[in-house]
Amino acid sequence: MAIRPILTVPDPILKQVSKPVDKVDDQLRALMDDMLETMYDAPGIGLAAVQIGEPVRVIVMDLAREGEDPQPRYFVNPEILETVEDTQPYEEGCLSVPEIYETVERPERVRLRYLDYDGKAVEEWAEGLYATCIQHEMDHLEGVLFIDYLSRLKRTRAVDKVKKARRRSSETV
Ligand code: K1U
Ligand code: ZN
Image (cartoon, rainbow, N blue to C red):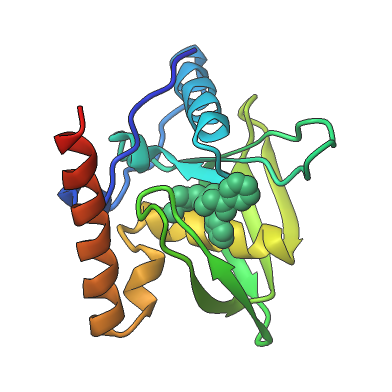
């Protein structure tokens, strides 16, 4: 297992549409293990493979609260089958847009289909933070970031802030 660098805006790889996975094998499980370790280290509650420079349709997530046992989840080739009309707001963050938090409205329940860590097909409803997080991560698979839902002004300011912070941190090493 390895902690891999997380790409940040405006890296063009983040705008790529991720490719479907052919099969869930040990090589893919090694990628999912790296992703989970990278996400825990960041720390974050979700991560899409493209965020570590691997544009394939794989997501990891853990929504356990502090003090609870870890609850890692793995999603290969996830699809949204159905959404409800009601939406919920959530102040989202993104490891690829560090230090920026903005409210995004998304459907409050979505029905999902995906393959798990063992390649088993799963269908289930996601709601609450699970619904928000899986939609945020599935947007990454389409090259969409949560800041793309903001006004052009807010988005430009967010990207500039990340660029400035990165310049500052590279000056101090
Ligand atoms: O970059 C990502 O896609 C991960 C992102 C997931 C997410 C957060 C909030 C709403 C939707 C999707 C994050 O994990 S940002 C960091 C974060 O939310 C967090 C970090 C530590 C503890 C608790 C939350
Ligand atoms: Zn993100």
